[in-house]
Image (cartoon, one colour):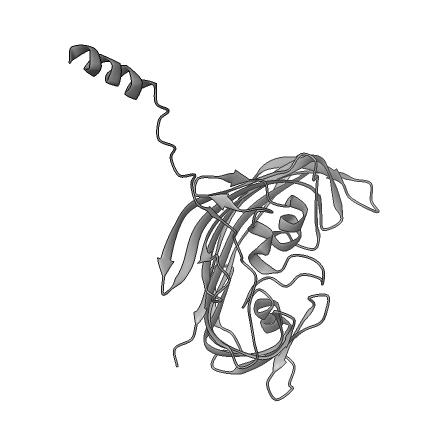
Length: 298
């Protein structure tokens, strides 16, 4: 009996360990699925605090500013081009801006705006009855992303720029398209050194909500700024951006929230165009951004 028992013990020990199921992989679909008549409840905030010190002839000139905005509105999709909105109404229940630390209501607070996007993602905003916005109001309204960041046709739209090119499991990391990210997060008057800049993303978790899958994705981006408002910098300034995206990942509903933080600190110098004068400067900039979009209640 002992011999049989010993043989069985050895045989069992020699069996291969039971194979574990591979982790589930998710095909992250951040694509908008909009249709005429769809209504979305949108809430957006943004703030930027900047201190810039310029040195000319060794004398410092310090400039400070604190800006921001806060808007809540109902978006009603009127027309679509493919899966993207081509025309929509924004009805603002709240709209304020902050400049130099002072907050004031926007002229379009409590009113309805008509928004159109052309095939290349260019946005046009005016009042529903056709009147034009003031320059100050238009600048604030253009900050609103609504159903996502619009990009030219053939390029990723909105939060698609954050996604991986193939399915990933919870805990997996990937490298997003840094050029696409820079295009939607940077200003048009910024230029970056793409070779030195980096981007990493990670799927932190997945859960079920109302029959849809939602994922939590974090993205860290480091952009090296080489040109600011036409001013070529002698030494690049590093801009750090951190994103946290909590959104539907199976494409069933248009719902998600994004938080972004930005930090740009450093010093550089540049030659002033025209005068040929050399200027040195230091930047200390911090900012944040939040967007929450979900189906509106009936």
